[in-house]
Image (tube, rainbow, N blue to C red):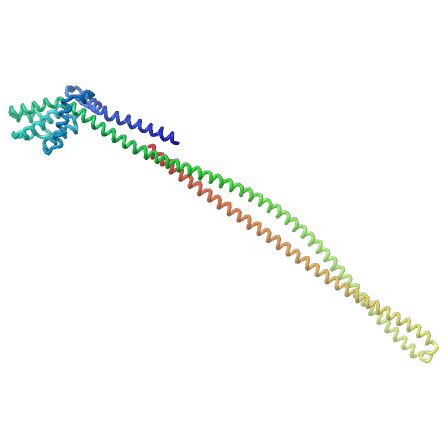
Length: 404
């Protein structure tokens, strides 16, 4: 980066030096060519040519020193005259009219300093030939001497131009130095911004890798959730099949209960008939006992035997009735147990459905949260990208402002 800065500074210095040199050294010749083209055929005897020998001319140096002293003085006449010289010396010696007017100003100042009457007023728009007609012989001699003195003044003009070129060159070099320092500072700022931009790019790349990893985790989690949902559906189907089987078993149990109740009713009817028959037989026996009361003694043993048999039959009938009642109670207990088991199964099925519904709800909420987080990360990534684009535009604008 430092090598590039030095190379850029060298190019800028070279371009500025070429521009300054071409403008300063050859300005007089360019103006002369333009005047020649504009005026057509014109007398070139009064043109001021550039010469390096003028710097060693003693007369030119003496005239320049004299002009400087008179510029420092308090006489406004000489100051005005020499300001015309220093302000446009190339034009004065290139145009004979302006040269004559300059000699007129110098002669007028000499007349005033020597106590003589000043020259008559000469309008700036009037030609010098018309103004010279108003001079007497002595005044015309003074004017002629100053006019001849203006011939070697092209040398101090060159000296003044060289001095001006030196000052202008120093000013341009100082400005160029300042511009180079500013350019170096701007390059350092651009380098810092570039490093910051690279750091931001690395951070964005890391964020993208993190988002890619999170998306991969979300995909795996979604796949696991799908597998768990399939397992839950399989369990639900198994529970549904078991519920169907339980319903079929419950139907069979109800049919068995109806059949058992029917048999119990039939047994009770038969028992009632047996009791009725037994009552009738007891009545018949009682009637026979009344009728054969007289023959009880004879048939006592036989009657006792019959009564014993009858008692045993009655005991058997009672035992049968008790057994039937016990079996009915067992049947009722079994039915109650079956109903409790059915209630437990129904409760288990309800709990399983609630648990599966809660699990599905949790999976849906988790997927929704993951989607919202992914959208937030995408928005953050978009904002970082926009910020990066703004920084790039500002850096590009700064580079354009530096180089152009």
